[in-house]
Length: 372
Image (spheres, one colour):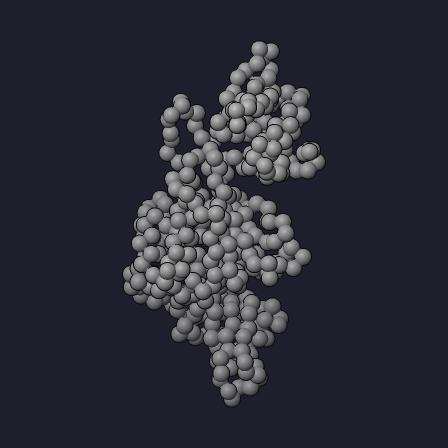
């Protein structure tokens, strides 16, 4: 049985609306302070009694048996039912990381920080795309900021690790039987994201980039594709499993997949699609200032006679576009400067042209690498 100590109880108002949306018939009992909800299942009438007022002293006592009844009907746990009722005004987006990245139900903080930041950019791009229906927007982050700010991050998954994004859908209006109402803007954004991610998976599975290209109007436009690339690449995860749970308050416009798995292998495909869709742009020289967060070379750092490949990643700020993480290939001498700056925690500064690829942002034609 369920008790209040197991988890936070949903409010009585949410429970009433949940039952009404789920097809339960509501009747006010003669005494006036109780409501009877009934539904016929398998030839039997199932009853749930709730107080008509949320301030009633017995509200919590009535919620517990109601949740137990709903759980037994659906052969689900009371915890899952309670969570579904509590999230009645929200659509849920879940992104699960591989168990190989998890240690004691946690992941490195730097990965979590990047994932949250990239998720916010992706949500803002999705909102802007749904507003404008344009292939590419120059002010996507500004246009979609309000929606992204209204979303919330929920609990991670127990037993593995994943991020939960709660998108506010709001309560459905009271309609007469047989009437329908168009879905709210927030629901349309979530469905756009789901369609876009599903199109990426289908395009990769079939080996046909045109599947993704044809889906940009209703799915991921160029801004979203670029931000999704950063989301996946910066996670360093071999794969991310996305799933969606839509509130029953609003009917879905199509059947969402139960889960969609996206691996790092799809990123070159997204690059090709973005390159084919994005109009030519003139490269812009930018200066990046930030911290060295990664160093990579097969050479001995102090060996200045063999150039080899020396690459670093900088997490910092670009005056032109704000927060930015870029990878930079350096000379042997500049690599030593980067190594020293990383060791002391000092910021560095570098100028070049930002390009995007499946590996994230890269800086080319660099000059002026130094400690900031």
